[in-house]
Image 1 (cartoon, rainbow, N blue to C red):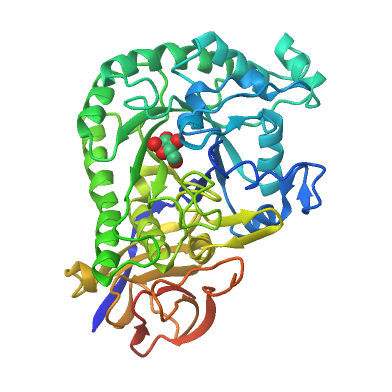
Image 2: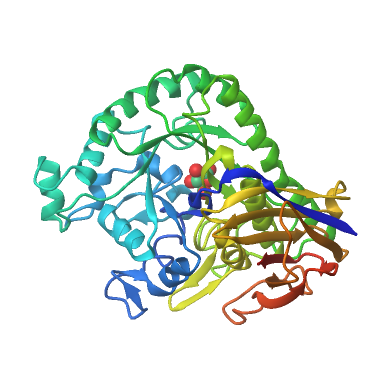
Amino acid sequence: MKNIYLMYPQKKGTIAPEIYGHFSEHIGGVIYDGIWVGKDSDIPNIKGFRKEIIEKLRAIKAPVIRWPGGCFAETYDWRDGIGEERPVRINWWRNRDGRYEPNEVGTHEFMDFCEAVGAKAYFAANLTSVPPLHIRNWVDYCVSPRGTTSLALEREKNGHPEPFDIPYWGVGNENWGGGGNMTPEYYTNEYRRYVTVMENAAPNAEFFVCGEDGLDFHWTHKVAENIGRVRADGYSMHYYCGSTGDPVDFAPEEWTAQLERASVMEKIIRKNWHIICAHDMQNKLKLVIDEWGCWHPAGSGPSKGANLFEQQSTMRDAMVTALTLNIFNNHCEKIKMANAAQLVNNLHALFLSCKEKCITTPTYHVFDMYKEHQGAEGIQVTVTDNDVFEESLTVSASVKDGKTLVTVGNISCKKDAEFVLSGVGMELPEKAEAVLLYHEDMHAHNTFDEPDKVVPVSVNLDLTQPITIPKTAVLAIRF
Ligand code: AHR
């Protein structure tokens, strides 16, 4: 029997809503036939974007969406995505999936999508293959007040007189790899050039420095050491927990191994933060984990490999989501934003779609169950008898407007767990509502034929008694 203590007096800080953010890149089936179906499509749409996805993102209060990449951003010319004539270009990913980029979705369209969802926009700027002035001009085009610059007039001519609200700009993507294969010293110098002119055009926006890949802490050291006095509002880092075994037919040991890999996120957060604080950069380089998720071998999704990186999402991916979001909540004072990669038909997706079909994955349901953590005060949680990873619970808790949300995942794929929930500094009520995400088969997943195989159910809990959480289940308790 475990005890979960909610330490009410020990507040950790506000859980930034943006920690529950998303990512939509021009890759595979994310944009075209994913979120975008076209304005003339028979598929219900809002300004060309799939209505079902918009409504479901509204339902989970999606706070922010990153665009247009990823690696795609590093060969993106924003001018291709405005006006009537849209050129077809080589998509960054063309050598992997043979697709070209039609540029049907550009700046105006993506902003329509954000507006329909009610999410903030986070743009990733190309630092590898265009000069700083080109990016300064994109910022000018987007945010200069109506009727001021020639680019603001061009925006007006293209149908949007008022400036777009783009609060976040990434300055480069994975510049240690696909974004120019730079050294951290070289990247930091480039960052200084770009951010200086970008900030000049949008002094109120926030700018994120490209961070390291997974465990490459040398990059963090060098960037923190060399960033100097220039503007920086966040440190963007990526961690994919890869794959163990088949995406769907994995063995029990592979369930655990996948979750162990996901749990490395905790170390990455701690270590990066430690380095950033050691350089006294904690006010400039709060963490922005703008790509995270499982990266299984492609081919298990409904397109059977036609959509690059598309993967099926089982209860195991849902547990990776639950664990990762709990880690973020428990480190909320260090984290400014996080973006699951990616939204639809790709890695760790919330949706799978093809033409008129569109389903939610178990990962979507976890985002739904966790949504009230957004903007809440994270509180310290202590769990007893929780040291053996494969039998452990992942837990986080928060309070907002006098209501507590506790989210618990049972990491074990073999044993149900029992726990008693207790409040320290506050007496808990006797009863609570809860939502349970569980399937007796840990490989369970949703398909176009069985879209509701894995769905959450409501349960009532008696908090005066021990609570049983089934193996592989996620439970959200609210009172
Ligand atoms: O999410 C797919 C790719 O993974 C992104 O384009 C890139 O940033 C990362 O390597």
